Image 1 (cartoon, rainbow, N blue to C red):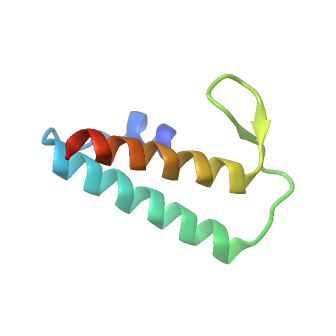
Image 2: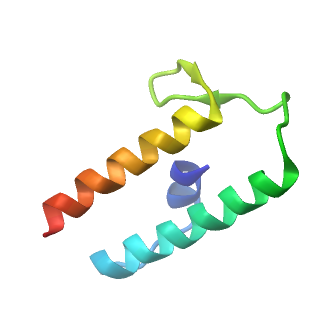
Length: 73
């Protein structure tokens, strides 16, 4: 959903604003998913087509964010 949202809805042009808005959208969807609980009808698919769990998807996003933040600093 994080990637789909960033592609479907334009993000701000400036780097800090874009990062903040993408994080806000991700947090919003993560909260909604946590409130909804496990839904076996939802399939989480890696960018390369391999399915993975919500925990794996979240872990990957956090790793990517950490990498991005290291490159900004």
